Amino acid sequence: MSVNKAILVGRLGRDPETRYTSAGQAVCNFTLATDETYKDRNGERQKRTEWHRIVVWGKQAEIAQQYLHKGSLIFVEGRIQTRQWDDREGQKRTTVEIVANNFRMLGGRAEGGMAAGAGAGAVAGEAEPQAAAAAAGAEEMPSTEISDEDIPF
Image (cartoon, rainbow, N blue to C red; front, side, top):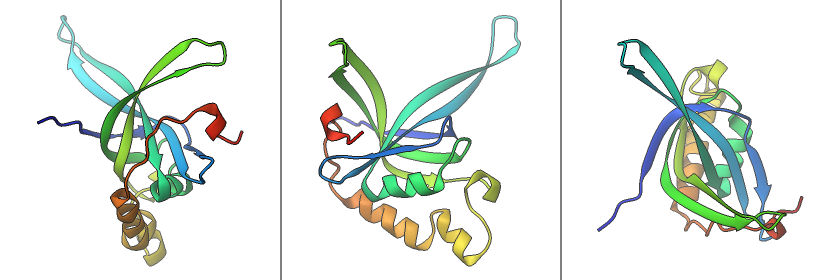
């Protein structure tokens, strides 16, 4: 038996970027910062930031593009994946990313998360977007091996 599961809570380091495969499948990429606080040898508190590459597919990718922005506080649940490709110079490149199965916006209205009001509350992961995200998560996730030919720009 094996388990590949990542759970993160952090803030977006940049606005999401969404592209579409040649088959019309949306794929959204963004970076997420998580912080760890620890004490060094001298007993002083230190903070270390870890950056994670997040990939979201399908309807969830479109929701992420619409509602997330740099600084948004979110919860992400997914799997860790290593991907390799050859860059334009022919060099073999490798990256580690979290392929999100689920994400939830946290925080207040200013942070793009839960907000008061009928329409605004739905934006935060209630009602329609939550159902759409659940439906998108229930679909079989396609392979994330995409080449430059799959992206139209």
